Image (cartoon, rainbow over all chains, first blue to last red; front, side, top):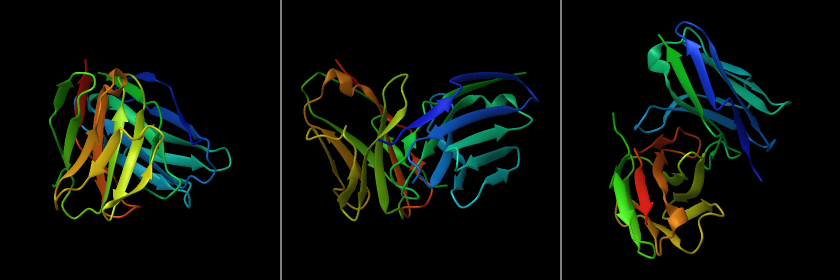
Length: 112
Length: 113
């Protein structure tokens, strides 16, 4: 069945460094890939998403890349700040939305 | 900015009891979802709902689970006879169209004793 694997499970970086989180998906029909950020005790919030017709999307310090051939996509955060500390979830969907299959989550810690 | 709301924030129940988790999706949204997250595990899809009927459900969503939109604002998840393994954080989400962003509620933590 559909599956999304996410790595690493924890990531610790110094403020100002870059952070990269990687996900692989199993269903080649997947065509929508959102990333959610969840701060402690708060709801998951969409930070960026990408659809299968593009290879990269950027929004200020956040970028996502998609490699359809390899079936993986990555989140890149540059110039990290302490407020970037949270759990980040990747997800995939084969219907362009609707049912989301989530990765296991990455706990990012940015040390000042 | 409109938000999805959920009540209660924490529900404690005895095994075998029925629970109803409530959600108020964003008002003009048409697609509604329930997900759950067992502590330390990934977020799992349970069910999607559109036009007053289930559009997709996962293997987790068995006969013990049901969803309902009883009025124009609420969206509920009912678990008829709770089991210990139903203990989890339950998230409601909504979107305007199938391909739009899903906005999540703050979750209901269900504890089954």
